[in-house]
Image (cartoon, rainbow, N blue to C red; front, top):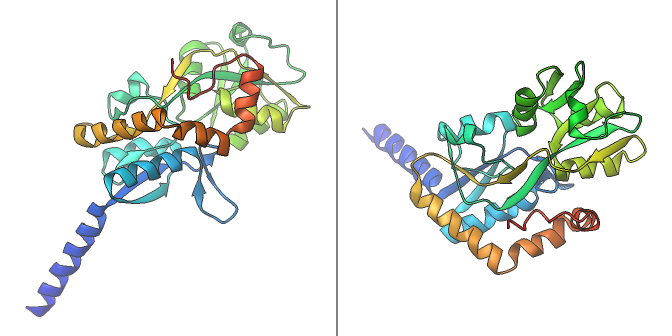
Length: 258
């Protein structure tokens, strides 16, 4: 009898421990929003946003590093409570999960090799183009919807995609503006960045459908961070270079939602 009482107490304590934690899923391969720092800790803009949400809820936060194309499944099955991973709030994703109000506005852009003849998005539609995309991203869905005559190669890591361009193995990589800028800066002598957005997108916090109470609280945190300068401070801490690049090109910065 004592054994069963001990087991019952153990599982009760485990359940309480889980319920007191806010578990956030992220794919920590996307600096400056989520990445593993030199000390082995997950860091970045989204991580700080997650910490602010946890603080407001009075809950300990645990971050789980999950490959991007597995985040929606993890959320739907209850393995995590939120997704904070530079995730675009698309109509397709809204069929299976819910989203907070947006906190980032960006767009899909194109990275091409320096020697490429591609000068605009229209050039991508020439039959026979080879285009690389990150698996499970809006770059992949846009390419499949709009580039019917292209050979589309879907890979599961940013570095794999950019190296396809650097090595001139493909004609272009379609991804978000921030990443395209960063990888162009890293391989400036071998790439060109076409930043005019193929389409504009917004990023939001992913939530399980029906969790309206949590959604309301998350939205309140995001609203407060917009008004009290928190996002400005995060930009100064993590994105000074990106902000300068966008300002120089006359592009609105990602936290400017209007």
